[in-house]
Amino acid sequence: MRDTKNALKQIIRVLDEKREMILKAERELWGMPELGFKEWKSSEYMEMGFRSLGYELTLAQDIPGFYTVVNTGREGPEVLVLAELDAVICPSHPDADPKSGAAHACGHNTQCAAMLGVAAALKDPEVLSRLSGRIRLCVVPAEECLDIEYRQGLRDAGVIRYLGGKSEFLARGYFDGVDLAFMVHMSTGATSSGAYVNIDSRSLGFISKKITFKGKTAHASGAPWLGKNALYAATSAINSINALRETFNPRDSVKWHPIMTSGGSGVNNIPDTAVIESVLRAASFEALDRENQKIDRALIGAALSFGVGVEIWDEPGYAPLYQNGLLGELAVEAYDLLAPHTSLERKKCSFGRGGVGGGSMDLGDLSAIMPTLHPYLSGSTGRGHGDDYRIVDPETACVTNAKWQLTMLTLLLGDGARRAKEIISDYSPEFSSKEDFLAHQDKMRRRADRIEYLPDGGVIIK
Image (cartoon, rainbow, N blue to C red; front, side, top):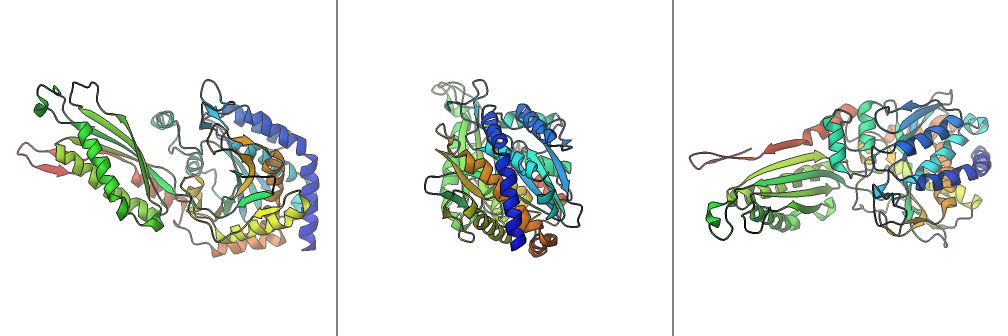
């Protein structure tokens, strides 16, 4: 315990010395919001910061982002620490980029600023001397799953294989050799009464679905019986799936949210095309697969009712995020050790009672194959992804954030990395390897016409 306290004092001293650098980075990154796989300015800024600290980097080359490995010179596992580069689309935000509509309305800029603090502290010989194993610091693009048409273009061109940054880095081998991972995200909440820390909320996995109903046009009032109404088939499908909602088990947190992006070309024509874009979310792989089959049956059934065709295009999104219990307990311990040395009061810091959140994140992909933690720390106000989102307490969001992460690393990799080894030994992965997980994701990718109408009036369901 005495060695941990001494380590904590050194972490605080080093990061207090780097405070101005960290806070400057938060403001400068706030002013350069970029969408996923387009974060070239942000990535270059972070590269310059790391290189000024003396790091050699492995760049992703054809997409933004990079990583570096800190080797303590002592045997032990490798811990991955992550920070995200991208912004969200929020054109009404006062600080949004006028061309792209991008704004840092999710606080990813604070992650990067804190990451620079972590990188600076790990260059201190006294901080590093207490650790065993390796630390991989990674600045990763494209966590927010948006601007999908652009990402699909990158994939069609062979630049990327997956639509999320961590998924893509995983497939490229940038996380090979890593044993466990964590990152800290911003959370909104009043900071005047102390820190708000949310350790154990889970997030949902998802599948993106684009459904195209293919009918036949005709005069809408003169001879509608000559047409096949794709719009009616689409609205019938939506109603059918809404009727299925009571069959979704509440414990699976299943959510299906569609939008209609095309429903006809003119009011005097029977619509020959109708397009639904949607996302199916659930808390487990099993639930995603089961409910996706139900939804496909409803889509196909609606198409059959109107004699139209239907193309269903499924794209794997992110895996459900499984928070690791032992890592969560360690994060609480690290926060409690740190709290007396900051101006923060403990407002909320617990593990084991959290629910399942409604969103999704690509860190879930890593949690399927290694122990993973994604806690939240206060420092912002407003609605996440909203035009009133602000960083109001950068000291907490960035400087204390970096101190918390270094304290977690000290508990994990101190004492010969005993705690990290215990967590790895206790972990039971959803998939035995990266390859098995990616194969599962690839299997979900399907684009096909699902009905064949035969000349004799029969049909084949595909």
